[in-house]
Length: 597
Image (cartoon, rainbow, N blue to C red):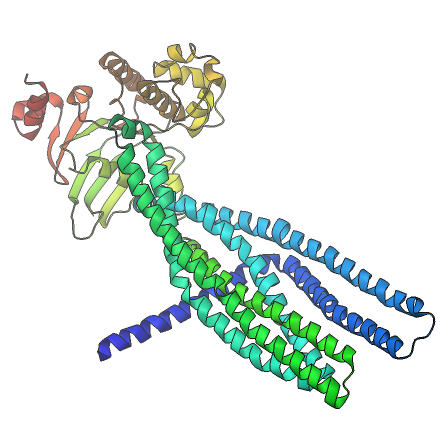
């Protein structure tokens, strides 16, 4: 029992500490925009001055009317006109400044804050290791960058307009009430701490529900992203109903969290309104008694009553602001969590001017999860210009070797050397400049065919682009497209087939003309004839360059200079196609399983 209590106390302390840190950080994020926020705060002060002046002016006009009622004299209208015009001017100034304040906070401050935060998140993602995106659903990342950042931008409006102006107005009105008549100020001033206490307590109840709401919002976006990305597969297997049911289930949970959070936030205002109404009634009753028994001027009572009514405004404003800030903090936690993700260390080393393409792997160990070893004591040497094939069963670690060469993941022990230099001494960007890649899964962005092919070499001329496409055997179908090389395509485009998309990515790698080339199941989506033509084109292009080929179809690598057979993260055999068949080992079994029939 005592242990559970200690755990609860620890959780409360951690929550409070995190709440404080999140709040401080939100304020810190506003610093670059402090000039505009300061201007907005000054406008708030002037607006408070207007709010204070209006009851005073009205009270003065009431006193004039009351005095005239006791002692009617000519010229009442003339004496009232200056006060009326001044009152009208104050109302007009209040309206204009309110518009300017909203424009500054919403159109300028929030917009630039939102844009700046999204740029920072984008830059942060560019510095994240590939493992981060492998473990984080794309939909959740998008949700944080769009919805969560958008809500955080609203926090500036909430902090400055709601809380700052609310507390300032509360303090100013309290002072004026006490100066005007301290007796009438007592009910209002004494009940205000109760209102603020209720506001903060009830606002805190909704925090966990807002946290849950934003977490489920990320899941919803991920579900939608997956559904539309794999839409043909969903339709092909008639899984629409199951997908909708799953989406509805998460959506309903999110809706419940939002309803509870909104209820806890909104219930504050009626409670505060009730407390303030009690204070308002007390002022009215006490004021009537003072007028009758103490001869207090009616104008004074009217002024205090108007201020008491205004006193409820900032209290409700603060109550709303505290609940609103809980909403914002829930979004901010998710954004700050992404911004605080550790970045991969990156040395500043650069590659040599001339790269021969010799690759050596020495006693490398690597695993994606600590308790599940994958690559164990892997060693191999690839000479410049060799065409090396890596084969083995699914899960043996073939693609993992590519990930390590490209430094998408870092090895746990051992060395990977290119031209005798440890790649850990190079920056990742420099290391990747050495490689051109063609993956099994094609990727095209929305743009022209020429722009897609030139993705790895944006400064390439049209002649160089067309030559690369010709070598990759895709020039003939490109010219049959409506606009030829200027036809706009994308990953979802139906203008080109899956095999043609693969050919375009191969042309992209050919155009990049890097000293090392990686083909990870690159020919899996093309027919046999095109596959053979691509192999010939690759041989002509690579010349004395180093090429790594990962393939399940062993017919594509029979002419490789060296074949490495991987099994359970280790090289169990290596040699040429003929020598490995002659050994009648594991490679022989793989080959026979594909072609024995």
